[in-house]
Image 1 (cartoon, rainbow, N blue to C red):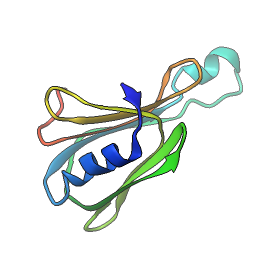
Image 2 (tube, rainbow, N blue to C red):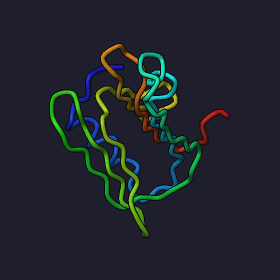
Image 3 (spheres, one colour):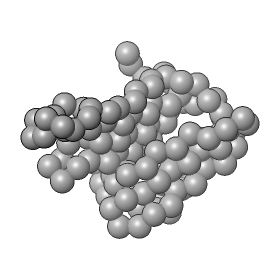
Length: 117
């Protein structure tokens, strides 16, 4: 993955406008938090292959922290803390954010076909 390039990611997000796409959204500090602090809470969210259609997409931020919002007919999907991206060989948009040690903290992926289970 490469550092997010705002204009290129925006262009790719817009290529999915008004299409039925599959979303993978994951946030976690997982077991990482409890390794060094027994008072820390583990938190996370995971959704895979949620099919949505969005009519507006926006990426905002600068440097190492970006937020992507997808406006659907009845609400929003968003991810914050994204820093890297790529379009893979299956033409899926993959975005992620990692902590200082390189551990995954957030992922947002968009595809026109379902992700593998």
